[in-house]
Length: 259
Image (cartoon, rainbow, N blue to C red; front, side, top):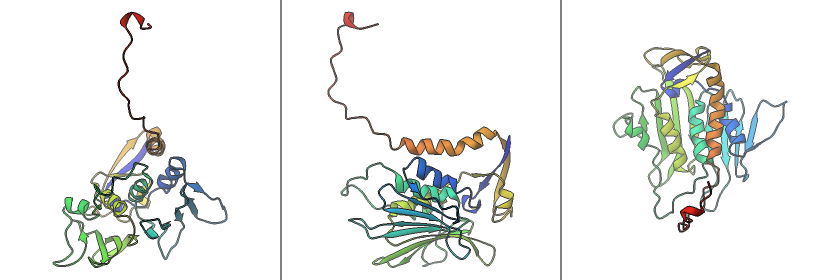
């Protein structure tokens, strides 16, 4: 058995294990990685060589950075995440990025609104007329810089205390696809607890009026299998769909069927 903490809200559970992101990208999504044991960093590049994910400890900046090359309909863009950004939130972003499902036809598609998942969870503007939305407990803030005519980068900040000391920040460049930012904000508002082992040493706060923690025994085999289950689920997205069925075939006569 292993002690597991189930913690809410998700944005204050601590960073978690980087393997939750890096292992599925490599094993399920076909991203390649370099290997330099003398450098404390991880580099993963997408199969089409358009996206590069860098995980590099930086006490003065973002630990996770994803850069994406320009495409026919979009300039280069980036996303970055602080060290204590929960891996579940970053994974929601990378899962959406690597989803092989075909995009809807342009005529039928509408841009995703990253604010919509927040509104559905009763997030409100920080003040009358102010930009962005704040979580009901006041510990998370999402805003987009710029104007309606020239929108800029997105910033998501988790903070604590009366001075609103930042715990982590996620940043999305102005050209980051809105559906990917929306995947992140959807995960940000997920009311279900996140699981952590050894979280007493990694939680940004243990104040009971902010963070709820429930500790329970879980079979060690289930804890160990969680990552592998995630890899299998993401790999299943890449399976070739069945061919479009043709006209039904005529069944053979009853007395000709094999037994």
